Length: 585
Image 1: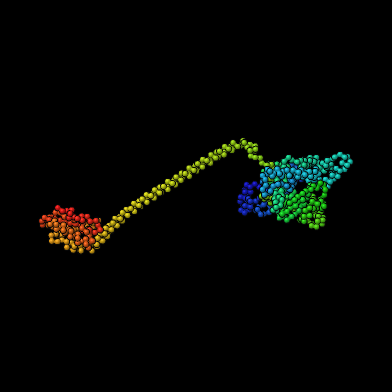
Image 2: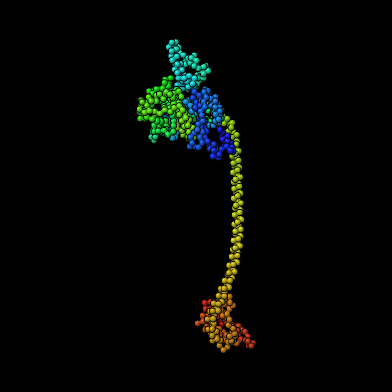
């Protein structure tokens, strides 16, 4: 069922539970085809969860000799059984011939696929030719079910008699036709099949798989091959019927492959026209050989001879694998003979068990990344792109589309760069505006701080002035009584002391004391200033500065002289140290 059909069925209300719908969507489905000279058979394998066992539908068969027409009949039978064929198919065929090949390549680092294909093809050409030589016309007719083993033996005896009597060669087909065992059309179909099997094609479709049995041992390479035109016919027939041929696997070797194998194990696969002996070591094919049956019956001696050297190695585990229904009873008869001869009874896998296990195992190989047996996945190596038809006709439109796409990408990149730059500029402008506003706020705050500092400075200056005034008053309070007594001693009889006061508070002269007086005699005025200077300079810590004597009328208008000077601390620079000399008339 296609995926969309399963999806529709899963989504249909009232038919499935949600869990069942999910299991339906995740279900794996595979069409397994078995193609041999006898015809085509097929089954549909389904698996729910990954760990669940594959469920097989009832097998359907077709005896048509053409693969495409036989596939149509198989698909029609499946639909009649109510089974919708899946999209993927896996082909098992005896026409895919396996062999062990000697390749100078390490399996862990194989060469490119084209080189590997050439190496394998050169090794497989004689193997495919030898397999085709096994298919005589009698073998083809018996494999097609047109005659049985007894009729085939009868024709062989009749051929021997006629050759003895006449000495002329007589064909197998002519004798079978005269004995009315087959019709003319059946003979022609059998001859076409024999020709296709025995004609070695110029090219082969190949598959390969390699492994190293153990560290230090020689690598083992397994290969398989079939005619390239045969593979292309299979692939084309599947594609025309909307099927995808995943791989083609050899029926030989695969028939005796089972999971969980022992350390070393032998198997004899009983095919229609040959017997294939396989030796496996830890699940991998270590050796293999085949021998044509050539109209001879199966016998214990013959089968034992195929594996005699392996038994000499001490390997006892043996299994007989029956792939033809007509050989089942014969194998049952010789099973006890083989056990008696070799002291170890082999196991027998009958026809039904063989095909059930084979199909189950092949379904399990569907998702394996590295299957144990070689598979053919493609027939012809893909040509380089420049050598494919129509490449150069498509190159110019592709280059044009690529150029337009590149131009579109470049334009979008430019638009992206412009948008990114514009967003960056906007973010920068916004940041600058925020910075400018922060600067304005900072300047305003700084102006306010400056005003507050000026106001504090003024208040501090006032406090300092007040402190200085108080300190001056305190200092003057300590010196003023003595200064007044000193001034009283220096007044004399002709001088009148008019005023004593200090400078204005808050000026630089606030520590100075200004003294003014009056005398009718100029000399007495000068003497007054000199006496005060002598008295205060001895123990008062003051000196006289800026002495000035000038004409000044007295209080009652009498003529006389006014005298004034400053009493300053001795550390100050005393100007007018000799005022009398400066102001003499």
